[in-house]
Amino acid sequence: MIRAHAHILSGLFLFSLVLLGSQAIAAGPVQEWRFKVYLDDKWIGYHNFRLTPRDNGRHTLDIDASFDVKFLFINAYSYRHQNTEQWQRQCLRSIRSRTDDNGKRFDVTGSTIGSRFHLDNGSERTTLSDCVMTFAYWDPAILGADRLLNAQTGEYVDVTFIPMGRDLIAVRDQNIAANRYRLISDQAVIDLWYAESNSRWLALQSTTDSGRKLRYLMD
Image (cartoon, rainbow, N blue to C red):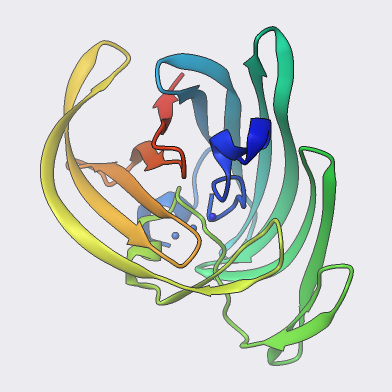
């Protein structure tokens, strides 16, 4: 969570498919996940996450993403996404996201009122359960979810996670033992890597409709 020029990244910029409680949301200092984003071997932008602990098991997540894909010196595809989420332990309590997906704009807002989560994607309003999770890749608790909220579009998506075994993955010139998982939905198939030692999210990879590799590598 591209045809003609836009076909390159079709279906993959529905971020936050673009996710997770456990260690990631324990009380402590601010945590950051900063990724350089590549299409095959070409750098196209960044996707950053900043998690700020509050009191009583609450925390704030700020997300900022920016991609540009050029074709023959022309900016063929651009993506901008900003999102602020309020969480209490493993449950989303509010969200406000704005996205420009190659000129198509999305605005999603939502908050918990009583025992339900009320969501507005600009075209319709829906009511979900009282404990919703977005595609919060930073939190490994996501691996137990069967539905996730797409923070870009406001869609509530069925998902399946499959363990893919143990890998060694290069992070900042070091090889780190990691557990790999595959996220499958009707929108995308995404591989995620988490450090074997502390379950920290390390990397992401998916394949576009045109067969190119979209990769997140830690900055």
